[in-house]
Image (tube, rainbow, N blue to C red; front, top):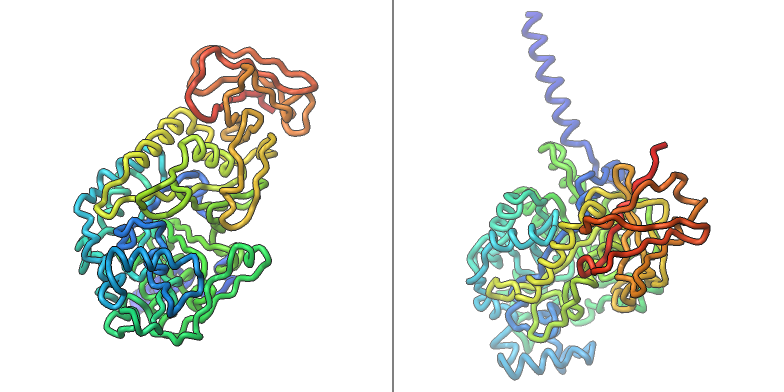
Length: 511
């Protein structure tokens, strides 16, 4: 009898332990703040994702085509959007006979090769990668049991999320899922009876049918700068529940290491946002995984997830880890016919600046509808990877130094502000540190053959150690340098080493 009671007691204790483990995070902001950002994210620094879906088919202007194509004389809120409607009318016909749904059969992804994609991401130096799981268009890129409007039942008729998750993880990278569904609420003018979006038969794709007065466009950048961040309408119970159910399905089926969110989550009731985080964090804890979720603006409470910026960066070093997402194309997040790709040099400088300030970069690329990654995009990724192969020790696993850097270039903060930030010069230097080693990364090759670092002058405020040696990563020879009360002056090699940012490995005496 004693043995039996002991057995029962053991079962009860085990049950209690399992219950506690399952309820490690409660759906409250206070509880969710106990979640810690995993070391793998702090070390990773660089990831890749892609905007790829039916909106890739028209190749016109940007990924917002699925919305702007419906801007006509009946719902002309933004006059600038009319060019999309006129283009659509000319090329595809009226919106009652050819709507966004009709791009789905054209999105065949016939040349999609997840292994080739993952290999390219790995060669680019990415440590985490994944697709947009669902954009604002309402089309799911995974094998969903909730909706028929998904990539397995329509379009490619392949599990894009599943195939990519396997290929990415096979190469040692973390898998991420990005989610924009909250934008679907009011994305299509479902009240406009002249378009197919008003047909209840397609509400599974276009979202709930709304009255004309229900929807107000998201605030402009100027509004955001003024702190105006309200969106209308707010989601009803049905939309809230499906928003959450789809996320849980992604978590259950694909176990993403990161779930990234676009903004506009304030249309979703806070109850459901908190429920997602607790579900995701508890699910990971049960599986022994360390995961990351992200948010923009104030969509989650500070400290419950990682803050993400869009096409922007911090002007100063931050004590907390953060993320920024940026596109390889200045104009668009999806493939278009007339892209304006950023140079590898610009992206490397951006990455270095972000890392020096305790951030990570998530770079968006733009596959074609058929699954091909454009050659210029591949070339830039491989150039970034080549730079990281030489200079990665100053990036991966690094942490910010006492100061992020010095130089003439100033960073303008704010949503979608990156185009306002100038290119860097040889005067711009960024610092990182790892394993007691200081790295100084110069963002351009000096024309006069000398790098001068004022922050590392004799008796400087930040480095109270003697410099014993300086190496230039990628260069096998010795460097001449001198330290004065004005600066640390380093003579560069006669021949240029590499094409982009240049990393000095600075060794010092031990304390």
